[in-house]
Image (tube, rainbow, N blue to C red; front, side):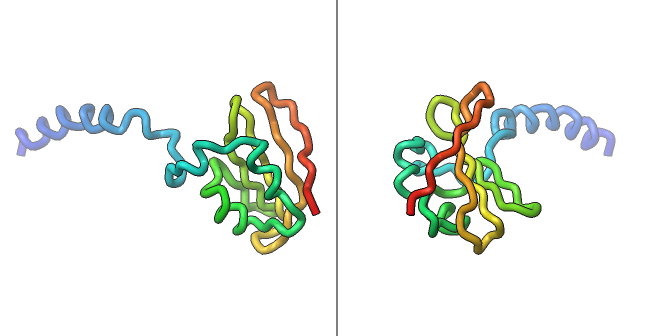
Length: 112
């Protein structure tokens, strides 16, 4: 018994080191998400866009809010973030904006 306890105490730090670097991964990594830019998202930000259509097109968002309004946030080029807001999971888009690394936000045009 005593040896098993010591073995666990010795092995535990090695297990933690093996997990290092995965703490920021959310969702499933995707080639689609890795190559996102504001320019290649813009043509698809239309009035008929829903949260589910956005996930189908661009993959799982880097973060999401589902309390009240649904906001999907995608990391894009130059440390920018594109936020897409929907009144509900089934509702069509209410707003789209891009935020730069300094926190300045600019509204994106929602196409007809």
